[in-house]
Length: 267
Image (spheres, rainbow, N blue to C red):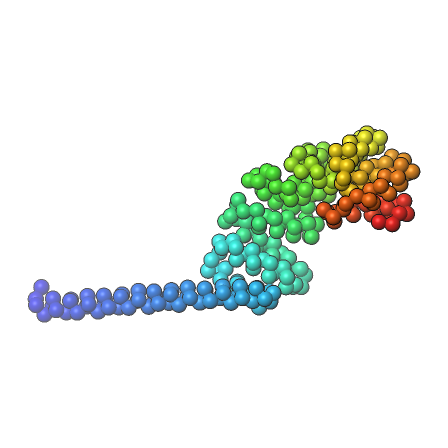
């Protein structure tokens, strides 16, 4: 190769190097700018979210999620925003559900996305899907009381699975024996499979004896008496229950009120 040709080749190589270098520099600059824009959009969305402005938070968080598809924490926030900004034909519900499902995918051992899905499916009346989410949660957290209770409710709503529901109630009672709601479920499900009302009165009386200071168990006992048509005994029990402390749970009034109405006793 002649000296002149070598010089030309060197110039071409230098020019190509400069072009390639400029390309990569420009690409890096664009990437840096994009990352800054993504970060700014995330912060803007979180700022709106922090003030409760879900509608204005949505576009900013969507922009961020397009670049960070597996950020479960932001997906959860985006889902909350979407569910709080209604759309026609309940599209916001479907989109919110999809976002919660996406949030659960990268963090299969995180109860938060599944917990929100379980609550959402209850609102929608999707009890099969709710039960499936409970099963996923219980796989890695088998003593999760929220999921156990939701499982019992879902099995009952689906129907014809009372024995299965009872097995979960037994687990619930083993984990939280002082919870009158769990025992109320036990009594109700036992009644549905044919256990005699007298046997259920004995069960309720035993629980009342175990927890003599609990208004919830006292009312549960009264309710079981009424179900066995022992109305005078039920009235006596409900009047005695009114003197006990009910400050530990608003749910106690759920047990008390229907029976109080039947007996015409003010709660």
